[in-house]
Amino acid sequence: MSCRICESNTLELVIDLGEQPWCNNFLKKEQVGHEPFYPLRVLFCHDCHTSQLDFTVKKEIMFGDHTYLSGVTRSLSEHFRNIAAEVDKLFFSEQSQKSVLDIGSNDGTQLKHFQALGYEVLGVESSKTTARIANEAGVPTLNAFFNEDTMRDIGKQFDVFNASGVFFHLEELHSVCDAIKHGLKADGVFVVQFLYMKSIMENLAFDQIYHEHLLYYTLETIEVLLNRHGLSMFDAYLAPIHGGSIIGYISHRGKRNASERLACMREEERASGVNTIDAYRAFDRRIRRMKQENLDYLRAAKTAGKRVYGFGAPVKGNTLLNYFGVGPNLIQYLIEKNELRRDLYSPGMHIPLLIEDEVTQLPDIYYVLAWNFKKEILENSQGLIEQGVEFYFPVNPKDVQ
Image (cartoon, rainbow, N blue to C red; front, top):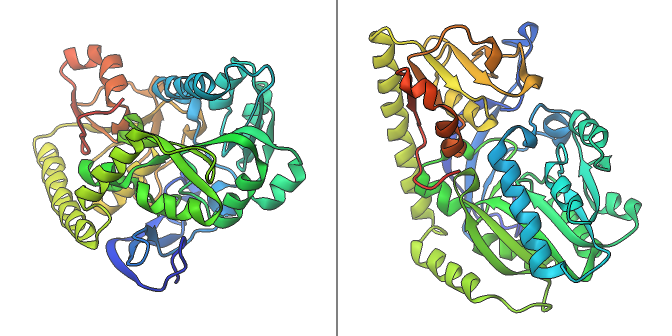
């Protein structure tokens, strides 16, 4: 294959997580054992330094309909509220009329916060179920994949484009960038929120590698992409959401000067060596050690007769479970809030899901797959902790929400 960003052929395999199911493919009972598996491998581009998957599960399979809802988690909604307030204060507070288009808008949680600030909003969401939920909640949402054709059909420009955790999903990457270029007003701002590969490495959060995430950006690599399409990042910062996400502000190229904090972040990134193949090779070695350490922990818990449940059933958790080979023999249930996942089973490992209100017997250990909401989980679980339930975080970064 050629690089998804620069089209170079100088790609090298750096991480191989084996054959895995599409991780958001939660299963009905009759589907268990019939789900397809795909290679989950990361390549490094020696020319532009972008890390990326070498296999694409078609977007219609992954995003045509799914069970993820962004509004389920209080921390994420609060993060979205802060983003909307910040964008408005920094760039558009003096405007009486202002508009925002959200790419991959899910259930409309981000757009609700823009609505509260007086914005005309439009979501573009490929999942039928979540688009319906958003429209029913009063958030105008187009059920479609966002690309140049979609932008032409919409036929207007916007003050703000937003992409929260979707910009690394894009099979039609260059078409989407051109659509943003054409749909963004001359003085508009594109807000991109993406998992930061530097944080993924530092946190050993390899579970954030899965088929939906085709690319793994750093500041250097995303700017290569943006510059190819007449766009440029002029400001950015690292937010704690999802264990470390970049919030980047982007304009038409040459429209705004780069901030001092962006310059500092670029220099810190360069000095870290994250954009070198040696960093990826070291990351791969650490992943292998982590697998053995976690298997030792779970096997010891089983030998001691302890009951272990998974806390949350995030998509990324299925990468971890499948790579570790952890099924119902070690984790009895995955406990979820999301009602769309009631009576389902995890792909690959086939662990049954229970909604919180179905739990009748407490575990001895919660193995926390939704580690990126550590603070919220621990705050809400003090009663369980006081009853002696242990909360074990396989990924345990210091600064998460």
